[in-house]
Image 1 (spheres, helix red, strand yellow):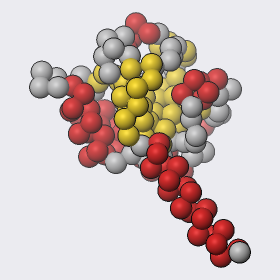
Image 2 (cartoon, helix red, strand yellow; image 1 turned 180 degrees about the horizontal axis):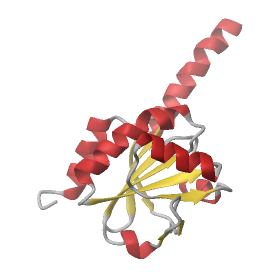
Image 3 (cartoon, rainbow, N blue to C red; image 1 turned 90 degrees about the vertical axis):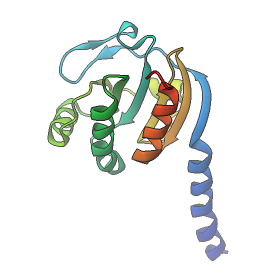
Image 4 (cartoon, one colour; image 1 turned 45 degrees about the vertical axis):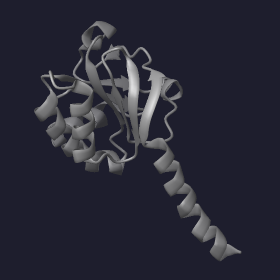
Length: 162
């Protein structure tokens, strides 16, 4: 029986992640708040833009592993896509040190109480959302992103005119 449980748990986790990757069609919740560097983000900053939103925390090892890929995507698409990090249930000083150490240049807002987790239905971190210009979540990626996959999805969302 223990052997069966050992086989079922990894299979269930793979299924959970597989179901969490792919197209979505939910409205993007309103995200506004203070950034790690003391600025403010409001809906006016991202309204009408294609967005990449990534939920992360400094204590999350997969977040640390994927952050360089997100930064490269930001360097490639930053003029056409609004990038926003959501620092989830984290210590402010640790989060600031994390983005500085990894050279992250796009803004991140703080969510110390995890208030947005329910709005998004976050299962765990990292969690990434691609949002169209109309404010609809088109793709959700639970877990580590694949840089080439995300680049292709962003190109698709931007269309031929960018």
